[in-house]
Length: 420
Image 1 (cartoon, helix red, strand yellow):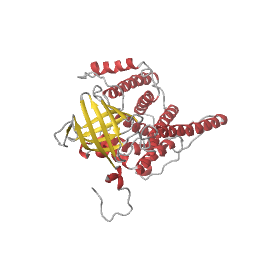
Image 2 (cartoon, one colour):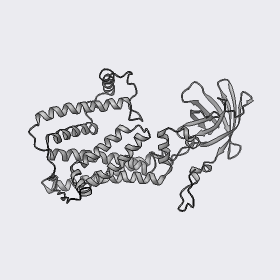
Image 3 (cartoon, rainbow, N blue to C red):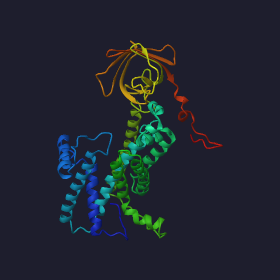
Image 4 (cartoon, rainbow, N blue to C red):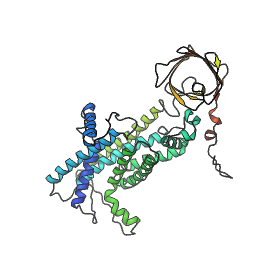
């Protein structure tokens, strides 16, 4: 077992209660517990009941977990996990009140948290290293006025612009997670993860990114791993006092078991890293900057828009005249109207018949049946109808490289600040 000679730390009653709570609480999050193993509808009903009768919420919880981790559902779930942990801690404290310390139990609890952080940091890290979490600003983003961006959209585009910064941030996450796998480097790994997650938490709060709860939990786990070394770190960095060396002894008494543990650990760590990296690389085929581009992919500016035989001028007051047309990934398209409103479409192209089927994402009854032609490499002409209306739309492609954000790039020498 890991030796834990902490001459300046005693397991006081308060220390023991705090340890019990976080050991139980983090276990409820990491290890599937009986409540989350219940059929989803029963757990969801429990959360709804808690929100209505305990918290007296003025509305019924209807939104279940999705891309946002800060839904009412998530907050109530955190509350329930906290209450469950408190009940377990109360029972545990009564039954185990004579225990002097929790060195061994804390060791295994710390191992659990370390490897959970390792896996999580691998996921976030590799998805940044190959720029999947924050892809380069999309075509629609390049056309979107800065003032129309949400705080989260601004943060996403800021991160996505730089492939190098993505790699730097992702590498630190992978490095911190990897170092957590080994007892001798776990403190350094926890410090790196703590620093990285502090920045992530700050971004989530300052840019209204809905991963506040989860990132706070990861930050708390890094602090949990650091807990036994806090005194040593303060002595070394702040008080300028001598710091004793940590002593490690084999986890098991038998050398054969320790050898088996080392082999298993090596295979497990290497295998998990390869698995997560391959998983991330495979995702590039579905989304991100390297995803295959569909037919007609690109940005277009509408030059001529004929509606029921009438050529419509690009008047700002017109709510039906197209201004820009963007064909993106995953059968998606978007139209920016001349009044700057944006409409999203489900978009299907048949290259054999040169036909297009598209419908607004929020109004599937309004369908567009169009044919397309490309008189030149830079032109796209759409013709067809929507319900009883006829349409003729002539567009020219927009070169992505015309945007300053795309073409400026990196410069070693800047004689003057280039801040536009």
